[in-house]
Amino acid sequence: MLKRYLNETSGQFAIMFSVATTALLIGAAVAVDISGVQKNKARLQVLTDIAVLAAAAERTDNKGELKKIAKAAIDANNATGLKVKIKVSKTDNTIIVEGNSEYRTQMMGLIGVKKLSLDSVSVSPISYDSPLNIALVLDTTQSMSGANMEALKSASEILLDVFDDDDDDDGPNDVQIGVVPYSNYVNIGMSNRYKPWMDVPEDGTSYGTETCYMTRDLISQDCTSSTYTDTCYNDSGPYSCTKTSWTCTNKVYGPEYEKCNTPSSTKTWRGCVGSRDNPHHKAPNYSGRKFPGIVNVWCGSEILDLTSNLDAVEAKINSLNANGYTYIPAGLAWGWRMLDPDLPLGGLTNAEPDRKRALILMTDGANTVRLSAPNHYTDAAKVYSDSTNDLTEELCTAIKSAGIEIYSVAYKLGSGDPDATQMIKDCATSPSHTFNADNQDELEAAFEDIGRSLFEVRLSR
Image (spheres, rainbow, N blue to C red):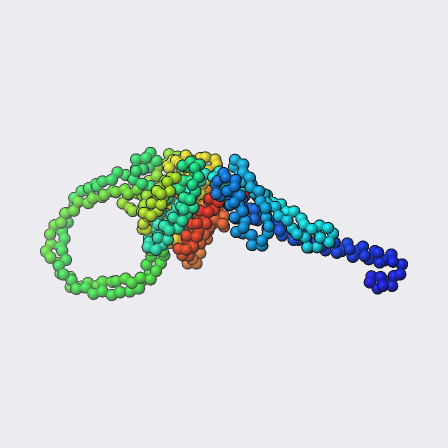
């Protein structure tokens, strides 16, 4: 084309070449500026989204204060220095932030377009529109003793602080939290002994028929001991341990005499509740099937039912102590019952259609207990772990199907038990609802993130 242009003498081709070149330059200029407009418009939308969430979370009716909060949020996140003007408005239930910015063109100025106006709109419901019930299902087994329990208490305090900072006056039941400590069993509380949905034997001692027999007392013996290494089990799993074996000889006995014995059996109920027969152990409500009280066992701290008194929640968590083995289904089942509107616990606010329900499951280990209804027997070697894990998964699925969000936190599980880690992860409502914490800092961060997620307002536009 250029050669023809140089040889062309009529001038017609020169005019055509000039027009075509101008069009190409204009097109290139427009393309450059369109790309810039798109980038800046996306930045503007992100900034107004951040602004509306910050404003909605503050729960104030003062428009001046809302605008101040929105502007501060934009300034804190405006890394590119985009110049933004905002307008903040409020309806009964929503906050609206409208943003405007100007894009100074780089090339389109050649054709007289010096700047372009950019607009964005972000809308969020005010956060107190969604009342909330939370069941904290917390592992209080032996492996949680010492520093682990202190880490749990610290993390829980951070979670509660998220809601304690909320000073709105929407009513005493806006946020209710309950605590379900669990190990082998859940402690439903001595005060529930005579509730119609409980079946608890009376405390007391019964005596059998006296029997007599001839025996002799051991007077002396020569004993030697030896030690050996063996595999032992506790709630954390197998570990190497040293045991002692005794061999005794030269035993000397006294004279024979008659000894009589009256057998006795003592029953003491401490609040522990077992499991109903299949399939009722997988259901939250009473439905005429009583819950069995288990005697002569310990099961840790009593549950705290849903309450808006966060000081009581904190006091309950601070009183927790570690003992026993891990039976996650017990914690899940009673966490579900705490969030169900029917008996046994019958929290009527759980029936409110606009009330959000959430269960936070925390554990530091795999299941080490098996079910043999109504009892939960120790299974430290995890011989029956497959069936217990299957039950855990069934409960997780059923709870989520009931409209309850599940957040799961695996603490110090690491890579030692990948099946347990995956089970806890799958229990959560979504990948964003599950956390894996390897130390206290990560546990505290997980609980804070969960609190913020539950408290956090949502973008509706």
